[in-house]
Amino acid sequence: MELADRTVGFLLSLISVSIFTYYTFWVIILPFVASDHFIHQYFLPQEYAILIPILAGVVLDCSLCMFVGYVMIKSEKKKA
Image (cartoon, rainbow, N blue to C red):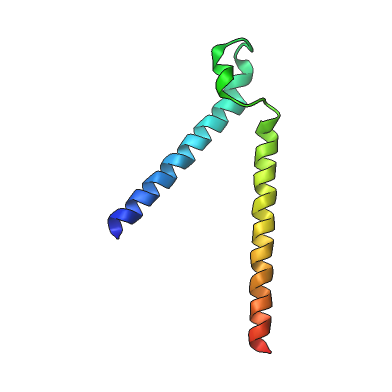
């Protein structure tokens, strides 16, 4: 099981570093590159650089609130 845990941890770390690198390049470096450069075809429009994290945050907040509400309802039913 230890090998599986290490593999999953490595894959999660690799995915996280890849997303961080992509987003950093997209938001910080890409605005300074000429708009007709070929590299722009690999990135979404700049508007999505704000919309995607906001949407992810809203989904995360909603999921967290639903989980807390579920746990509160479950604990209330155990008391009764």
